[in-house]
Length: 438
Ligand SMILES: *Cc1c(COP(=O)(O)O)cnc(C)c1O
Image (cartoon, rainbow, N blue to C red; front, top):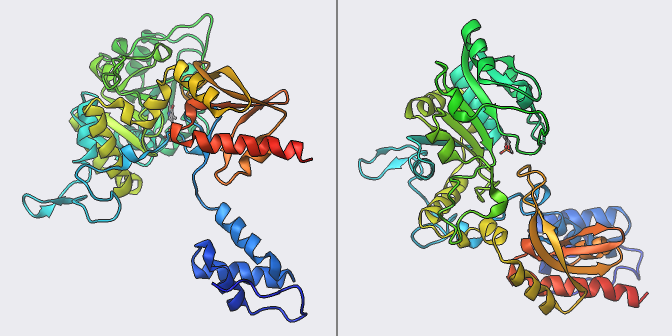
């Protein structure tokens, strides 16, 4: 590639096309380089075209190193997706081929896109059937629309909550066409409250919503799932976080202590819930998705609803979820990035921090984040740099996102892939070197 022509010396600016050509090394498509060149010339700054192209490149989706210690960081895409989750089942690149997404290869007829990942996820939580949609908000909306439109949905006043990003239970109920029937009080709700609502009103189902991102403590009471399954209407439990099974058979060391009390799909269904709903990208550790799992009849009613078509997950997501489900079934939790990061021993993190050879090795507290397990801390370790280095770290080639408290910058290694430690060290060194150089 020819170098950029000497743009500053003559009054006559280079042509848009030749300026765009000179930027070809960036790897951006020609059309975007033309945009950058045109904008630079229009601004009377042709020499700035390369920087404009670089800024455009930086604004695209690209890898970021999460050194915040928040495992499911909503701004950074929640659950990390690794090659293990994207590997497919039988070789080949996951994305670059046709698939039997909706084709029955045996009969040569149209198939069902829920027959693959959906079936495996159902198996994992002990459900008769499962359906995959775009996120958990869609899952809840679809369930209520399919099972309760025009009728009442009984929800405890302690669970009429907002789960971040506009998922507000009363609004979701209204949007689905169902009618909210509030039961109990903010802090205490009993079985009889639900029973009274079912007896007196036209209630289609009871809905429990997991307190994913908040806790009500003190003088509180809520019935167990098992107490609500014989009221004569189905019980739907929005567990949200997506823990499949309390026993965590996919983890060699069993369930980690910090997970205690988190409701799981398998146990909730085993206790008698008709359906559970949960996210794909929280504790499940997969792509953004929502899962509806439970009785075959109710799942089929959801699948038949017109919204099911509008909310259905695409092939890329279903392939990734299928691969993830197989990994769970193989009990290879260490191949699921979220679980591998969440269960790395602290001693290992300390050793990695020491090997970075910059800053001060320090114990820290990581969190699961992403609107899960509020207040729960996972012992962790990393390095601390003096001063607020956040901007310099973000400005690194691969941006590194850190946490700053009281003029100290914390890089938590629990959320960093060990393969990226070298990048973290280089970014930290560069961030601190700027200091010495003035
Ligand atoms: C996170 C969460 C949701 C929303 O899930 P999305 O996948 O982000 O739409 C709904 N309900 C509960 C209980 C949650 O924890």
